Length: 288
Image (cartoon, rainbow, N blue to C red; front, side, top):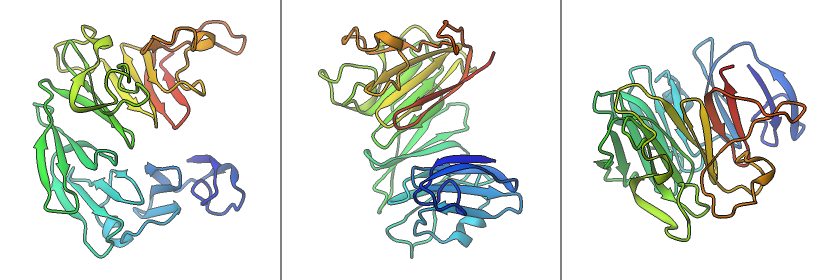
């Protein structure tokens, strides 16, 4: 594994004291479970849980014995995991004396949205439903999100969520829309409290069980892949939408295709396989 960059908490290289770490190679890491701005959770070849950076209030032996496949959440409030049996556990880091709580089984993915104070679990069932868990300090409450079609994938930031589905209208949105990161004009709705389709993508999906795209959420922006094309929307202050030189030309444009160029600024055709959003940047993996 190669790690580098912001290292004030030693979350990038625990052996380096510099705030910006040079590339660090670690050969014993099997997978990255979760990377936040201040903490990195890793699973080693020796089946050990390793935490770099800020140390949250959790019982490492208890988490380690679950053999997590992935982790989710906020190190300052709610942290969770999906274990090898696809069960979902969570705990409050503000109450470390309480043990991990199992809330779901047969999970494909799980995320925590702190702005909505809820955990969302995407099940592996044929229905592709999303379970929503609220009142995390107890008593726990579960409900199903009102998305009438099969959900293939989901993504969350601290304040908003996107869902990619099998319907003709493939992208649903939920949460804060302060910067139009839900693909609709923030002047019409600053927040969406129930999942609704993003109008721009209506008609671009397919009625089948094969996912033709994916979604991801940055801090205040979003990205959607549909059949290799990358669409972005939300805050564009620092160029994270990748709209090129005309990103501020049309203030009424909410959703737009990314512009890709090579080292000579010549246009490049990209067949996007994956997209990831950071706080103020976006990264795309090109199938070409």
